[in-house]
Amino acid sequence: MNRKAMGPGLFMALTAWAVGNSAFGVHNLREKDLAIIMPLEEKGLITTGGNTQLGRNLLPSSWYQSLHAAYLKTSIGDALMSESRYEDWTLVSLRIAPCAPLGLAPSQKIDDLCWPEVRLVWQPVLRKITLHARYMEAAGEDRSVHAIYPVAPTVAFLKGDEAKEAQNFLQKIKDAVTDQGNPETLTAAEIERFRTLRNRTSRELLNRTLSLRASGIDPTLYEQHGTRPEFARGEGTPFLAKLGEFLRDFAQPGHLQTLTSFSLPAGREPAHLDEWVFLSFKGEKGKIVPLPIAIHSKKDGRKLLSLTSSMRGTMARDDEALYEPFADEVAAELKETVMLRVPDIRRLASILQDRKQILVPNTSCISCHKMNSERFDFHNLSYLEDRDISISPRVKRDVELDRSWITDFLSDD
Image (tube, rainbow, N blue to C red; front, side, top):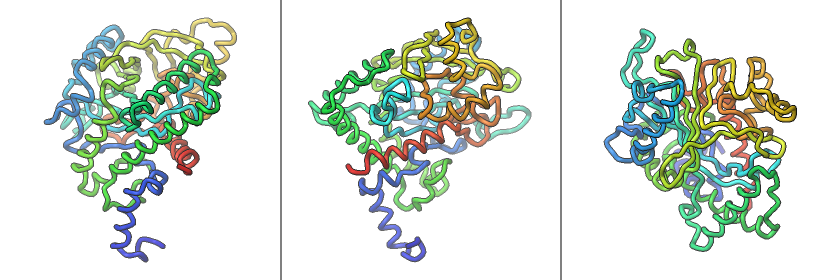
């Protein structure tokens, strides 16, 4: 029965029921639920310079200072301070991952040994500015922060011993896959118990994700990628209020696992400057600490290379450290996972955008950001100036696979 045939009253009642009924609802999540995008020109977005403490609590000024200190050691210099004030940083998007792989290679049971997480994308947004002799109401700077938060078992309302049990399972799995390539350390009974706790945690996250919807909006408007429909229908303010509560539970600084950032040098001319630096950090008791960047084998997860916590790349080349002479086996693997030269972009794009074939730890930071149609657009789920948001093929494929995972693994719960 279509919407017109059932009448507005029944349609609204069924919509409200769908949002509140988890058995129906989580399988009805669509692209705009799992990749949440804020319109750049919207007033009242979550920022570090807003009227509330929320943005400053989610992206502490100490993190900004750590980013600045790290960029000072690179060719970016003081561009962060000179062009992107702390108060300008804005939450432009986030990803809800129902079960992110814990392994380091696709072969390590990534659909089973996985755990839900939330990923925030921050970007400095300039208001009422003229760039390239053109006035822009709002423009995203060519730099970004991606912050990843696995759902803490305690946040997921696992009780006491269950939360400890889940945490122990997670640690055992991570220990097993790190550099060893062998996740077979849990017994069949332990794996089954892990699945139970994981599915409950994932379902809780997804129920909360579904509750972000406004009850009066046609569910079909959440299909396909784009900005949340609440903003176009005058529901932006209540949506942001609900999102704030969601983030207070799932994105506390103390729960941060990793944080990455990229930046163009000062000048705001990506096509001409043609240089981007990527940084890597780990979360540690609410602070961020530089984390060496490693590339792992896509075959079994073993570590191929360990680099510094920063990498520099251009439209045509990756970091210079990846062009060193390596052992034949390492060189052969890098050729199949890293876009070292321009022809590699087309050759490897379909592989790098598909986590069934390659995971993020199997390639370089720069390669992960080279799949947009514009060669100088390195954004995966953020804005290049005042253009429409860049949604990389990797994000779209991830969301497609996440929706499939929900159907395959939560259908009988």
